[in-house]
Image 1 (cartoon, helix red, strand yellow):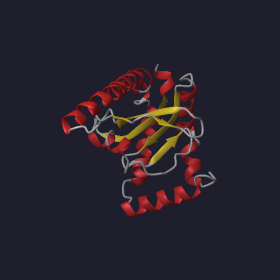
Image 2: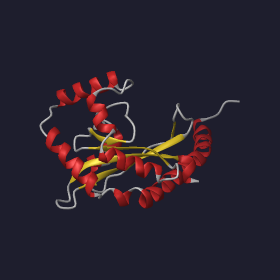
Image 3: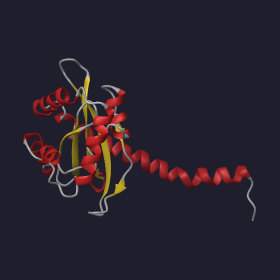
Image 4: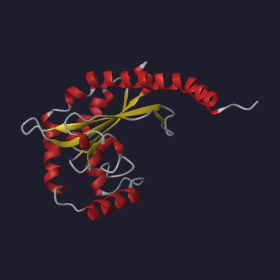
Length: 193
């Protein structure tokens, strides 16, 4: 049976409607979870202080320097022995993030805090790369100003089999009302049901 373009278009619209409705419901559930469980701690003095400190260190980094750091990170991340990786996954802020993770009842899978350039400041575990600034999670949150937010699509985590959706927010300095960094939180979609 040969279908004309109008019929093909209608069939496609019918097939995609439930998927888009499910995606919209998922985004709403993620937004609701984030509003209650993530946004309240984005103004914590520890987060603000550590992001401000790293911004002082990275403010003059060129793109070439950032790319070199990112390439180095990617080359050694599996071993986890590089001092830069250790700095990101240890210390007071990383411990704070792990406590938020543990206190979520398994809903939060990971947390990454970034500086104004999208470089990792602290994380619950070592991210696969050091520079998040070239990714939508940073560009659509911190890159869009104080009201920016990015809801990532749920993806299967190969190591756990869980489906995880990332939500990213800018970190806003309450004194200057400017974006000084961003946070990305991976949420297990099963916790949103």
